[in-house]
Image 1 (cartoon, rainbow, N blue to C red):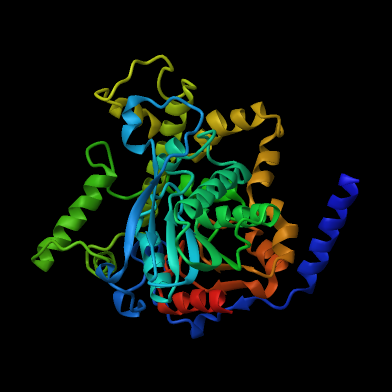
Image 2: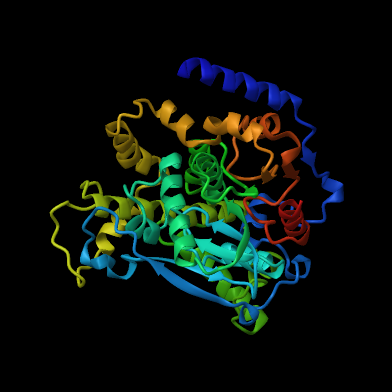
Amino acid sequence: MHRVSHLLLLLAALWLGGAQAAVNEIAGEAYGFPLTNPFEATIATTPPELRPALPELADIDQADYSLRLRPRRELPDNFWAVKKLRYRLARQAGPAPLVFIISGTGAHYANGKTEELKRLYYGAGYHVVQLSSPTSYDFMTAASRHATPGISDRDAIDLYRVMEKVREQQRDLPVTDWYLTGYSLGGLHAAFVSRLDEERQAFNFRRVLLINPPVNLYTSVSNLDRLVQTEVRGIDSTRTFYDLVLGKLARYFEERGAVEIDAAMLYDFQQSRQRLSDEEMAMLIGAAFRFAAADISFTSDLINRRGVVLPPTYPMDEGTSLTPFFKRALLCDFECYIREQLLPYWRAQGDGNSLLQLIDQVSLYSLQGYLAGSDKIAVFHNRDDLILGPGDLGFLRRTLGARLTLFPRGGHCGNMNYRVNTQAMLEFFRD
């Protein structure tokens, strides 16, 4: 009976995918986002004058809270600061809908992109809860039951548990409806959380928005891993990539006559004579994600005592320096983490054996029937996103139809703070 039901679901998904209305695809000439280079857009994001007016932080009634979730493990003393999971809540003065925001790869709940989304939705009248990514060290230590992120449905269970605990802790908050969004990897997590909510119905989310999510998670992390391998002119045994970038920044600030680092700085920097080349920008993006991969690999190994990064019996207390081991973890990219920790753990749980099975289980492919049949879910994506691979946009077009909004440019999340995009985000939630 189970196999028959599964087959009928797939057939329904295919029929629904074919019957969907045309994709909401924004024409290039009609889209005013000025950065046509996807690397530049990813790094510099939107010029300040093209961003929406958002409330100042001083005008937001917000505070950070802690949850003690008690995962079944003994944490090393080094993790004393993150044995409770923290989140941020911005509250309206009276009854209002609430939106949960799930941060992207390795990101803390106070990450810059999460903060911008908070200001956007708060200004539109929503309560807002900001959550760290299941791939962040604080979530892995304080909220994850297995501290091996990357198995999307299990990460969603951990997130859902956190959301329920937030609602319990904030039981006096007057909430009229529940909404959910996430960007980058957080967008993928939002899809799995939404599917889980269909079963448990604790929130019955009214709208769910996925912003620049990976479609095939393995393709996305492979694309990011390759960026670090970019050949950059001027780097040799005596001059590192970081020397090159810091030199350019120093010359840029010298020309300006001041050192001022703010949201506009990166955009202005890329308009200057010191601007980074495509190869340098690719390396910079790849390096940022390499640090995220190293953090995941290091934290997962330390918590689970697998002996991949550091010896499982290595003595540790609050004064133990873990720097040498984190340097070792920096040699491990996403592919390395999948091969050495995620895949062996997944196999040990009896869920499957091959890498292809794992890839299918953790990607949006496994949710095709649900995504095709759920009118409350929409995806915003960019045609030039660095994390997309062959066939990914085709999958989204077939599965979502008019619930896919495809922008012509913006790189990876580079146009999230463009006023055209933010207006579309608000309109989707209000519809």
